[in-house]
Length: 227
Image (cartoon, rainbow, N blue to C red; front, side, top):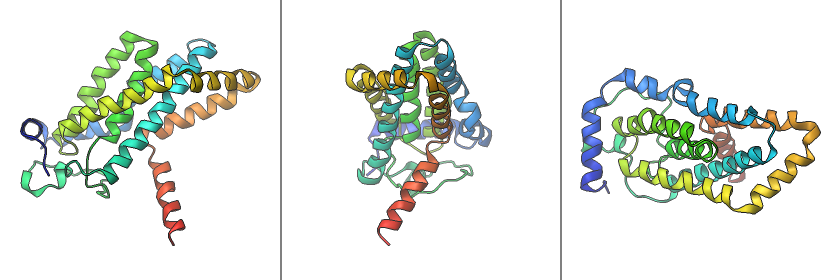
């Protein structure tokens, strides 16, 4: 099943404009380029002061990002909304060589990449509204729109991500119990904050790579359990 008329029309329009330009894809797919404003802002917020409450809010939000990303990948495996545009021969899209592309998920709803980044942007937005707005615009134009233009997703996939990512972050940030638990944990580790800093950087490193290492570990465990 393909997307609705507006969904497919916007996809084809963006693909006509940018789908054949490999340099646009190279920038949009470069982990350092696309993620720099978001991850720089998160690190800056983390070390801006020694505020345990702020750090607990950030960590609670990042927990929401993890849940949202896992849900988006689960939906791609188990909820067939529409076929990924790039592998739909009926669409005749302009293409470039997409590095590291494996289509074990033929459904593209919602975009896990956009879910991750919209979630991270929401964490920033809750702490610094202006910086968060700039990061949001960056995510829309550098990450979200190119993923439609090169046929990785329909526009509705991006809209789904725009709902899922922020919704999970807001739930974890506003619901008091996870945040209070994290705050108490940080207080208990006050004399060993270097451990928390290390885990924070490991999380950001994995997030910048879309949690691919964790995904591969999960796949290997599933194969092992079914062998």
